Image (cartoon, rainbow, N blue to C red; front, side, top):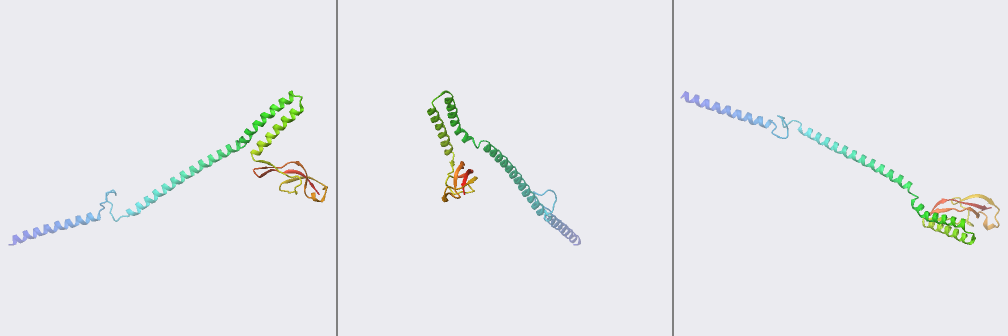
Length: 200
């Protein structure tokens, strides 16, 4: 009977050891990291979250830096392209006007040749008048407009007084009596003051 008791005790002790070993293995497995994405035997309760948050912030910072560098490069390219276009525009700004004046230049050369060979003053005057009218018409089409200054009140914003002379009558005091050089507008913007004589 004592042998049976000792066998039972032995079996019970073995079962207790097995149970204890199983409990220890389960506790160990619970305490160990079973996450395949984390290397080694790192425990789950270690500060993995903080590291991944730091990596995420670092990635966002790298992305923002990359966007900033690209934006700076794009702006620099835009600035250079804009400067180049502005230089080209300045260099060719008068191209349209010059091209339109080439016809007048051709007519002037023909008139000059005609003056050298012709003795007919009436024909020469007609030719010169035709060239002059063509020049005026061409410039008007480009927006040039002559200022009407004579008999107008003197305006320092539009006129440049060369001299003052006694007015022929009271109505002409402070007005433009004579125009030495006409003023001009280009597309309604003043480009040259009229040089005038003012009555006093």
